[in-house]
Length: 333
Ligand code: ATP
Ligand code: MG
Image 1 (tube, rainbow, N blue to C red):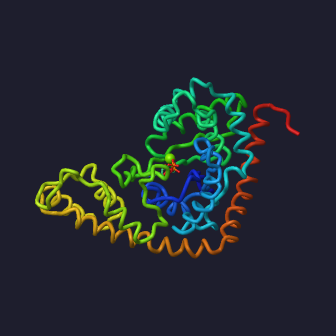
Image 2: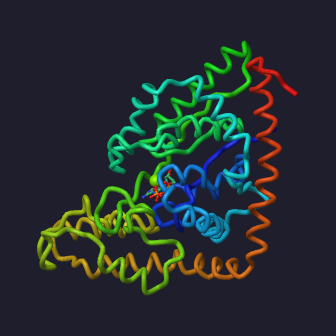
Image 3: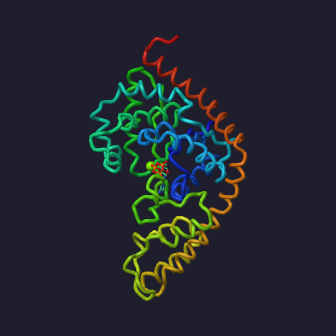
């Protein structure tokens, strides 16, 4: 029986962090066996809001690949591939741009939010505005039917499926499957500064490659409840980043619930919850960091993983592109 195809990936804008681990990476470890999984090192997408720093985007390709391998992504099961090495993705997006209007792109709620968050104003890079069509290119090129996305990203999958329906209708047959958004159980990890989202670009993340000292420093400075001044004061669990991280990584939920109750009643200090989190994160990140350092020594191996994954993905995506070009009735040489 053929396994369902899953496409996920990350923008190559910096090393991955514990938010990625909680929200996506650990699910990908499971999907390796149940699905045919493609992981896209999304460098061209990273460029849509990092055109001023292509060097960072290039360097981060290796960083992200190292993170994948260090957490246990197995290149024999999962195909790790580089977006800019797959021309079919770009060609499909160019075709799709004729099946979507500018006003539809502007109305996309995910895009609207991100334009606001990035402060583009009227100066929106065209590549950024068009990235839903680029994402449709990515997803359909692999004929992925399963696409894990954050809750705020479902509008992008809807846009992909609109394009899929138009292409199929024009072709008069089903060339492309519709994709289904899968929303991970664990939502979004807040930043260490208390901001709603930990993100590479906001400088509020704990990297999966962080040193023991960096982990401790980040936990020590972590946002808790500013009104919880003395140990005996009642404290807030909601909006408290230490508890958000414990929710994500503490494997003893019964003790965690007791700690939350005690914190809310009063009598549990920030020092104690932070020590617990520090221990948990050191235990999580320690082996990843060690493995990552070993892999970083073997640059040729990492390059080979990316190169061979990209070659495999290239033949797959070229077939889809040809089917779409033919299906649309264009001239095929
Ligand atoms: P950037 O700041 O460059 O946008 P990022 O940290 O937001 O980087 P992305 O590469 O944009 O990371 O995110 C890839 C995927 O990782 C997201 O779709 C989401 O599933 C997951 N992810 C990212 N940040 C978090 C987070 N804080 N909590 C849970 N999941 C996250
Ligand atoms: Mg992001």
